[in-house]
Length: 612
Image (cartoon, rainbow, N blue to C red):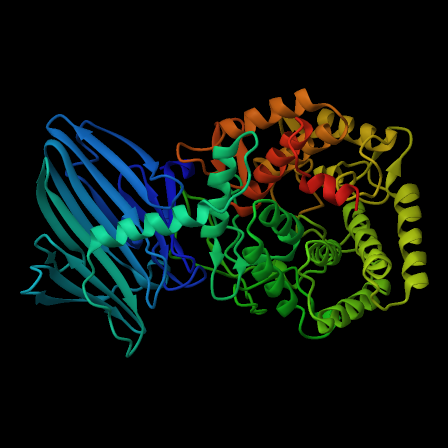
């Protein structure tokens, strides 16, 4: 099944992917970064899934279409067969004590034979659990099965007969006629945890929809592309880990950036790099509480000495994200290896200092500055950056081909110095103002001389290299130079010439074996980069061109409005982890930028950063 054939449901602790065919192929319990109990996404049905669909789905003529109910994460899929039509409703109630997934089948017309197949396989499909039938609740008439392995227990409740066979799969076959319904629920518990009573599934679905619609009603954006902005905001909220306020980069691990390739990484963590735009789009949408929680997560992660600062952390701020491969999983459509953990967490990436200082500066601008202790930690980070920015690093794209003096990294080191200076000047904070000003000027001058090619009139990927990099498109939006500066205009033009594929941008030239990233060639167009191009157009007054790019990007969304990390222009498919927070963050940012350019009374995140 194509990546874009999945829809996302979640409970602000974890989430699941549900396919058009009614198969739930990805679910980690109880948290985003827990071991998957449904891992068919990266293997086969034997690696765990939950199918609820017309019987014989793979051999019978049927049609399906789906939607989210209103502005919510309640998914509704309608199956139509020759004998009738049914509606399957999926959701994860916003977490109380334990995670629940509920599914309800409703008869619309005629009658349809349905199949229920549930085969959890814990630890990413590697552990076959015990199944134990727990009888029937005489009061409700519901059947129950317990699925147990080590620390994990999944309880299955159903209003249809359940059969737990020798193959460790729970099954049910039943017929739904017009006006009929059937309810299903799975809930996870750990050792010695008490399972909640059998729920009223219909009520839970209604309450979940109301919760999301109440949250969505707070969004104050009224400009162009509002439906797309709203769906992206809901997706970002769904990717938020409520206990800490951290936002994971994606729900999944190891969905390939190149179909059949090896560029497969674990994105179920929180990247510092996404901080500024995340904070700005949340504040712009009226979600100040969420922005405050995100800011607090950022500040907590800074604990420790400055040299220990990482580019990413676990959802609670964990630092040890050891990367390993899972050889028993064949990978999405054969894209191996499957990885969990992320070795890039130990890399030196200077740009994150700029993103962090920028985010906390804008938090103060929004009236939610951290406590004085937060500024003390920031000054220690700046002291460390002063002694480190001269060094090469792995850069924004987390390359594994060795460190270089990446131009974007130096630009973001300048951003860090600039925001530190302005924090003192605008908020009266204490710090070595003159020294930071000198460092800011030194970095700026170095980038203009060593990161710029005057013959081609373009900035380059790294000092002394002829290569280009789409991250250079951020130079205008972060305020390093005005977007209308001839050097920025020249850089945009060069990137269009050399990195564009069918209207979408590659991150950098990876069509041949590259010494930059140390990986085999080839990957999809990076969606965030194409949004950055649209932002530059807006800042340069090229609004009509920006609008065309935005329309093409919006056309890539799947039928329920979701985007992955990248787009394969040759096959016309989404690739990379899904749904991708950065793609949806940039969608919101560019939509607001276009709305501001059209005269709406708002300031876009790109304008805020560029004119800080």
